[in-house]
Image: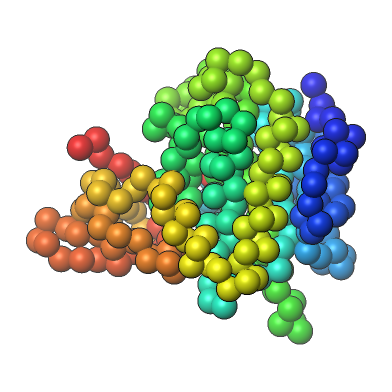
Length: 266
Ligand code: BTN
């Protein structure tokens, strides 16, 4: 079933996020669409929601499987957040909003896997792709792309994703109302977005850390140049992961450099 536009508009209680929402039945990617809107002069708070993405984009240049009638595929246009790296702050805000919205509606505790995957039972249920749009006059906008697998059944995933991806329906055993999840995410997004303008990015990071399950895990990280292996020791507010290797040395890994993170079962 196509998303109920009216119920989202009526039930969303926000001042900024979603002040205008573009509902699309089918689009290549909501992030690409939002980028075009920014270039046409649209700005902060505009949301693009699609029922179906034909070229949904994931991080590391991967495709994001976004079939019709099943998920939340959306992008939000925001102003840069925080005094330093806005991309990392937007990632924190989005991931936090997603896990809190899921918990609020289902009592299921999602996990944030560094740098920004949303997992449940070790499988990916959602992801975030934030992008920066820069104009020549130096004005910048952020596009926060959020994808959540909601009502897919196991067989709806392509075979290469079945063992690594999941949906809220698989986890909860019932179909969920996609509109409710979208509304909840947008409301949490507004809460954390506003908080970030009160110079409270430290609070947001602390909250994010509570949901992040990477610390203490043995992981292998691929960057375009080399592999890093070790135990995740800590994460810095700027998003860098400190990894202790077998020689007891600490290596710092920047989220933007990585192309894959593999967790080992300890
Ligand atoms: C990831 O690789 O984990 C990030 C996935 C992000 C997917 C969302 S779906 C809505 C938005 N539009 C896109 O093309 N990608 C993001």
